[in-house]
Amino acid sequence: MAEKPLVNHQAQPIVDVHFVLLDDSLILDWAGPAEALCFANRCLQARGLPPAFALHFAGPQAQTRSSVGAVITGLEPLSDFSDAERPQWIVLVGQPGDQIELESEPARAMLHWLRGLRLAEGRIELMCICAGAVIAAHAGLLAHHKATTHHHHLDELRQAAPDCEVLANRVFVLDAPVFSSAGVTTGIDLTLHRIAAHLGPTLAAEVAQTMVVALRRGPQDPELSPFLNHRNHLHPVVHRVQDAVSQAPQEDWSVPRMAECGHTSPRHLGRLFEEHAGVSPLVYLQQIRLAVAQAALRSGRNVTQAAEIAGFSSDAQLRRAWHRHGHEGAPAQATGRDRPH
Image 1 (tube, rainbow, N blue to C red):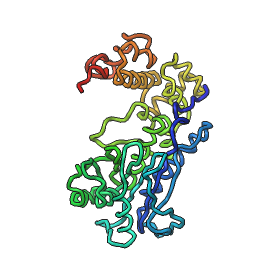
Image 2 (image 1 turned 135 degrees about the horizontal axis):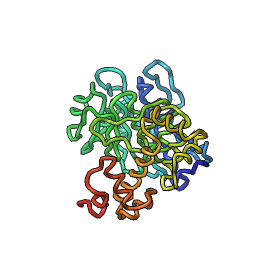
Image 3 (image 1 turned 90 degrees about the vertical axis):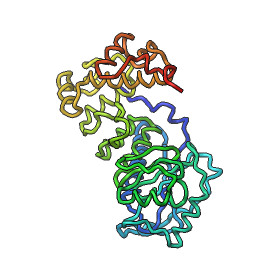
Image 4 (image 1 turned 120 degrees about the vertical axis):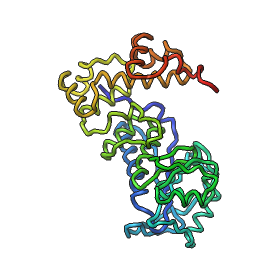
């Protein structure tokens, strides 16, 4: 089965992503997210689609020394984005040590520049990786926002931003236009989430598979989307079938048809799913359809419309799957019209 293009991607503008670097910036804080964005562009290119992200590396100096001693040259100057036509993501990263030192002339120049930013959802957004949140706090960008940082810097963050709601024990925290992650590698988790929000969960799962990264969230965040769940494996056949099902859940799927998509037999596909995804092909299909139905209900569709959009044969089949998978109440109670305002 031919893979379908990402919906509406070509109508979206490219996002300019600016990694802002000081001396001793933790290289994994920015290299991991940067690679995830590059992988996303490569996945799009493989589909015949244009890139979604343009990466920039900027700083108060044209050259900087990374945390591991490698020297990064050719950094772009800190720019004014007030007239930018494309969305801008500003990425701040941490430094080694128990406290973030911002007394140097380059650090003061960067803080001055940050204080001039006018953050706005969908226009100029801030991503804080690890102790990058402390830098943002000193620039006054976290006031009246929720944020997290590395556990060693939580108290420092609270002191630097008393008006910020600092959340501990989180992989990442979303409070648009501010997004923050806890530690060095959690910047990749946050970036995968942002890729999923911008390009869809299927492509984010493909990036995670390519990077051999487990998709995860903090213990107090919502559970993983079913589109990302059961994807922490490396088997190409199972991923191929999961991609096809998640991109077109409303189609008339059966185990034989899924097996044909995976170029294997129905019995072997069942074994592969149980071994690598931890569920059967049909259970996976139902979980995807339920996620689509829930999204349709939350957007205000009625149960009949949601069932049709998700690929259920009837309202009754949706209701049976709803209860079989442990959802509380009835589908009608999940409609956007029924939710309190």
